[in-house]
Length: 183
Image 1 (cartoon, rainbow, N blue to C red):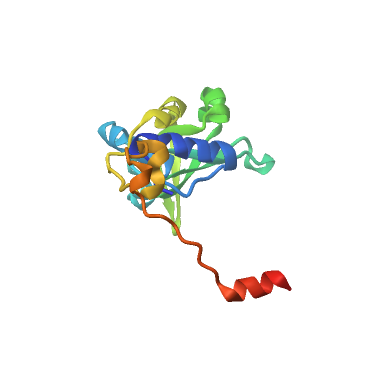
Image 2 (cartoon, rainbow, N blue to C red):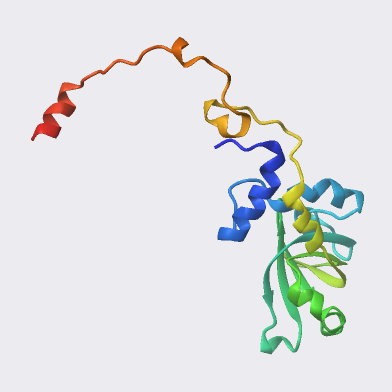
């Protein structure tokens, strides 16, 4: 199925709304240029950053965990078009941003990278609700024009063709199908 460029964002949002995923572009990819201008890095860049580096990453919130054994610490997993990032939210930061943490579908997280061997976390210090930006994906266009096929008449209309100029169809009989049907 081919997608009109001006409908791509809307279709991604509808996919997520109906089934929680999409086979099309990741929703955050539509926002990447704006996020770059704000110096917000990708999840992949955050996970590859050096230990103790300060940065801001953004993504869709996939998982929120606040296990009883963690003494009030919250663990988040957020995702963008490049991968996932593990976020640690200490108790004081959680209390300061409680409402935002529990309700946002997309977050910007400013914090410090913490590396312990192969395990990498972004320890949150400031959080920003980016759910409004995520909602704007519905109205964004993809700059890449997609090719159109014969099935695109619903989007582009049927060309003005005189039906009398079309070739006349013929009835072609396949004897193997006829013998199967007559049994």
